[in-house]
Length: 394
Image (cartoon, rainbow, N blue to C red):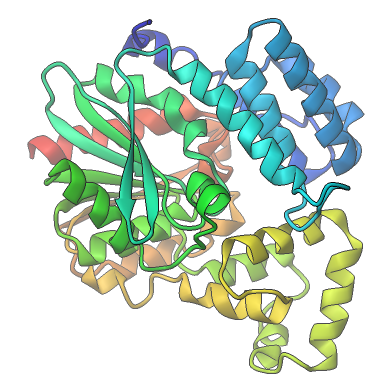
């Protein structure tokens, strides 16, 4: 068994910079994410980006890299590579035996993550029975805790991808809990429980199980909305971190699509059998990335099988109505180049009843302007923990 790293080693292990590893935007972001967390060096990622000129090649390259890393005994690297292959594997594909390659890759990367994190004597895992499924929670306690941090992901993350941060928080004196809820990781892949906007339910179950109160809740990516929803209805959460904010998921997705936005989409809503939806379904299916993107939605959300159902369903994930119910100290994070956080000003203004509102818009000059501040994770963590320290002691 081994102990976690010290704060100084952790904060110094995150390289700074956002690079053009690939000319495919979606791949480039993921490659930069691996770089920002110190999992790959820059030269290797340039090489991967040049070779992976299709999503099929991406899956092949990372599967082979994962197998090689496992054979060499580099378990965290192996888990990261298999997870990378899993990420862009289509959700609705079956192999000749009728099994899902995505499910098989999940179990492979999960087994590798479990092997790696089982080495740490200060990190524990528990499965909380809840509502006909189980909530997976990893937790670590500080020697003399000065506060409690609870963290969860968003749309398509695995909580294991964030576990490397636990020792950062405990080194600063915080008890920390990482969990997955409906539509995420283990809950989705092993229990087939789909995502709901009612995030206060699973969050409340975690707080109940551990008897937690006066906590800082950090929601990552779409988790920025999910955490806001939980905070609106559970006042045991006293500090809320939207990392990043998702004020209007529908609007952000439409904004990302670009040409197909605004009134064009609004006029289609509620007409699932119109020729426009049929045309869109056909066009989305012709491109691997958009086919993958929609397939992710179909697998994450319940009873969603078409673009019409998808775009109508994600309208539920908006903070317009719940923002006025948030009474906690609130930190709103965003990157100036991130299309998912285009409603930064609207979110700040909507928090009319929050105890305090702190906004932080990260810039290109800081190498932190992309989604979830990929490019400068060290700055991001310092921003969160400095704010948490101030609000915990204030």
